[in-house]
Length: 88
Image (cartoon, rainbow, N blue to C red; front, side, top):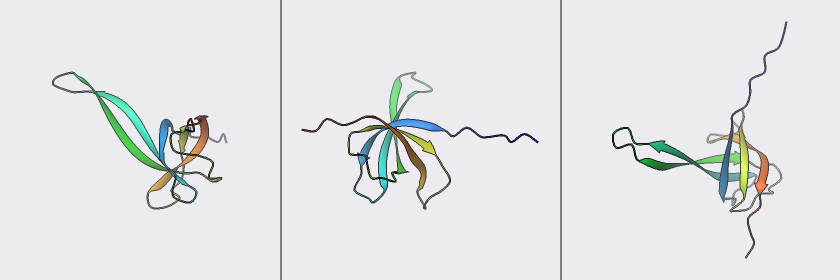
C-alpha cells in the first residue's frame, strides 16, 4: 500500500521577538481586498515558532513550517533563515 505524505504548510515572515528559549515570534503579512470598497488592506498575524538552536534574531526573514503542537500556542517550526537582519 502506498503511503500518502501530507505537504506541510509553509509561511514567510519577519522575526519580531526572540526573548523566549527556543521560541521565536514571527509576523506574517498578507493582503486582502475589502469586500465592499475593494481597497487593498494589509493584515498581520503573529505566530510562535520553534527555533531549536536559538539562531534567529529580531528582523530576520524566515520560513516557518506547520508542525505538530509543541505547546499550547506553538505549532510551527523554523525551516530556514532567508535574510539576516542588519546589525547597527
